[in-house]
Image 1 (tube, rainbow, N blue to C red):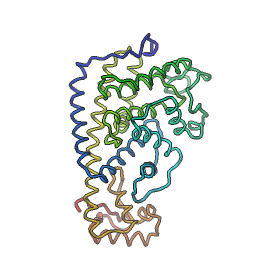
Image 2: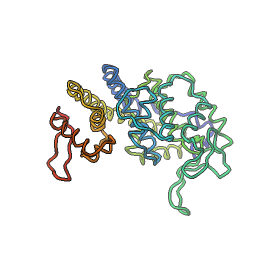
Image 3: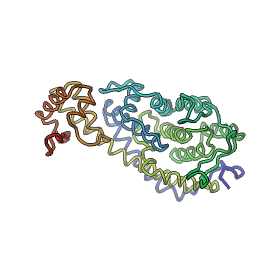
Image 4: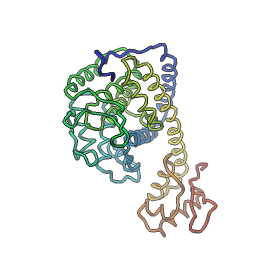
Length: 368
């Protein structure tokens, strides 16, 4: 039996003694991280939040097999938050859609979660009314006209059913119960509530597609409410994406079980802990970027150089810089790119790598 086939399946219960030690540890680390972030200036906070939100959008999409362009995501978030940063590029409709959902969930976290709000999120996620090549029901609950909603893998004829969702005729009532509980006052630890909400929504699986991305946005909303801040300083989706096979294994295991969700919640709390630990790398990168610009701004660089330096200091920048890459990034000629690079090299902002000739490349001097 699936978990939702049991009577009163949403009366979840758990062994708090098994969770309390790990939960206390995570709450302590969460407090330390938020304390570090609160000590930063306004611009550094914005930069840190922009990096986290960019990672969150990238990874929640990657979990579903959709790889977005990092610079498009970053540009979309910056524009929608009114941030004045260099190197903004146009973003596609699908990028703006998932960005709209995440920002609505985290910036307007105190506004009620309603059916209409979820429908608006779903419309943003699928503006063309299609998932890939397939037409889907958008901004409404799914139906079962094409058969039961199943999560499957494998080749046709040898498929494995990992989960079968409640029938479509149950969705309206199931979602009413879910939304009422979501907005109700309770004494559940916010991290545990986030884990319950995530599992509950995914199990109802109310939409034709996009359930995972919306579930993770709702989870972020719960965490934002608990912290009472709109800035995000750690990314749950980034941690899930690191081991998404285990994420799906944990979901399947719980959905094949009864309403004792202790094991799921323990995994979820550990996932939150991992996302907080990984946030330290982003914070270090933001602080490094600030220190580098403190030095450079004493003798300002041009806009092309600023764009490239900002790109190279990001944690997801791959490889080194060369003339052709510089020209492509800044949309300038190779001659202009070479002059800019030589200027940065003379100022010891760039360090030339040992390889020469056509393989000449440069790295950012992070000890500047």
